[in-house]
Amino acid sequence: MKGKLIIFSAPSGSGKSTIINYLLKQNLNLHFSISATSRLPRGTEKHGVEYYFLSPQEFKVKIANGEFLEYEEVYEDKFYGTLKAEVERILDEGKNVIFDVDVVGGCNIKKYYGNQALSVFIQPPSIEILRQRLEGRGTDTLEVIESRVAKAEFELGFACKFDAIIVNDDLEKAQRETLEIVKQFIEE
Image (tube, rainbow, N blue to C red; front, side, top):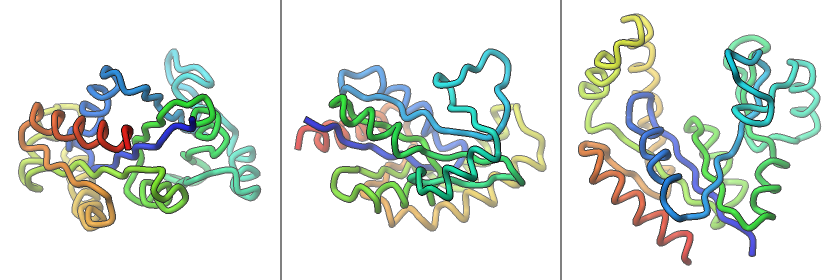
C-alpha cells in the first residue's frame, strides 16, 4: 500500500521542527523528505543524507524537466526544492512522507497530491511571542529577527489554505494535537 504525505509549514520560531522531530519518534512509519539544494555542503553534510546537492545548472535542468514538486530560488543560483522522484520512492516503499517546507511549497505539494496529503500549519500564539522566541534563541542579529518577523506576517496569511492549524502556545499540547491529527489521517 502506498504511503501518505504530511506537509508542515510555519513561520520561523513557531516550533515546527520540534513538533516534526517529536512525530518522527512516534510509531507512524514517517520518513523525512530530503530536499535538493544548489548550495555547497556545510561541515559534515553528505549528499543524499541532509540534502541532495546539485550544481545550479543541474538544478535548472531539473526545473525545466518538471522534476520538482516545488522549488524556490532563495538567492541568485541558490535553489531549494523537493524532487518528485524522492517522494515517489518513499511512497512506493509504503512509507509516509513528512515535509518541512515554506508555505508556498506546502500549498504546491498539497495541490499536486490532493487527498493523499495532509497539510498542517504551525502557528505562533502571536507575532509578539514569535519575536520573543526568536530573540530568546540568541542566534540571530536584530536585522535577521526583523526580517523573519516580517516574513512571518506574510506567511500567516496562508494558514487558511492548510487542512489543519495548530496554535503552538503550549508545546506539549501542540504535539498531542498534531499527533492525533496525523494519526487519524494515516489510519483513514
